[in-house]
Image (cartoon, rainbow, N blue to C red):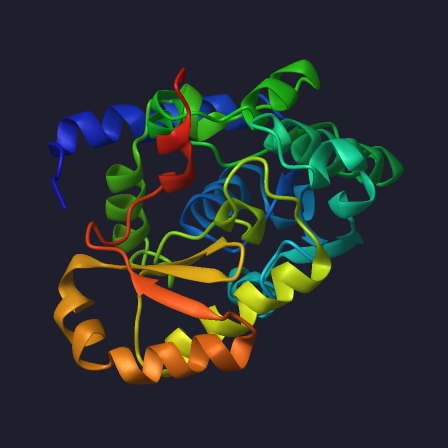
Length: 275
């Protein structure tokens, strides 16, 4: 992890604190991931716990493992967590899985969070996008901008590695947590997303986690599971290929393959001709 100087970090922290201080109260879109956890911790410090609520979506596209972890981390932060139900699959524009899929997902999510915030008398909705997200294909950011949602980490210029560094300094349990993304990111654009397919992917990923793998993705290509494993565990994955193949078959896939390039974020965006 590349570290920036103490002076640079201090400057970014001061900017983040200043941005959040302008909000009297906030509802945070909270997944329990690295970014939203840091955002919650800083908001609590700046605004006080009585002026911060965490809002987490319970959705077929959000892995149960991650949802359960979000409850644990909310308890660690000693902040109130509200759970809202969303079901993007009911939106045909989402389920047909065009490259604009994330736009429709974020639009539904943040409309509901804004409604929840309004009911609670909370002034602002904020979320945890960071500066690195600006360099990736993220149609969800368009929905966030259209709805007037604030992104303090991004505004303060904090990158993912810097957020991890700051999380470590604050002794947050998410400092080294593997990156996560909703289950819909496991499907190539154009392949329809169904609840059955989401469950199949989730089951296979739960199996990999039980085998001891840390950073991975199970990408679904019809009946084929293309498995991306983090660089440090690729040799281990090859040695355990029979077990991995069996767990994929048990999850409902007919075929399985280890991706030679390993784990990387946004792998499905590689098929897009225009960013």
